[in-house]
Amino acid sequence: MLVKIKHGKKFKLTIPVAFVTFEDILEVLEDWMWVFEGIFPSWKKKIVNFGCEKNAIQGFSLGAAFELVEEVFYELRKYRGSKMVEIDTKNIYLSVELL
Image (cartoon, rainbow, N blue to C red):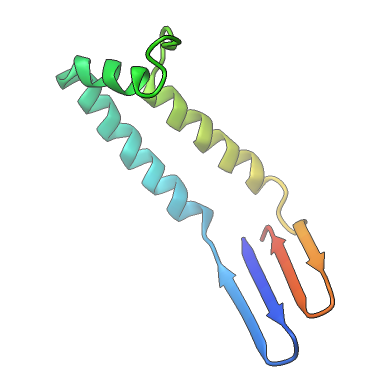
């Protein structure tokens, strides 16, 4: 993915973002969550109940949440070569492209 930012004629910035890096990080985090869920089962309950003590999610799995995010990255890779966002105003141009 490329993020391009231009401001006027002087400032141009292109930031490459690799999906593979994100996927690797998510896989490692998913493995750590699996370990923590097995070793500290009460830790999982604290995360599920954090901020929503009255509406706890039944059957919540941190591993499933990470799998969902991995699946989103996998689906985004199918749309290589297309622009997700393109904003052009008077002096500012922003573009996000999938490569």
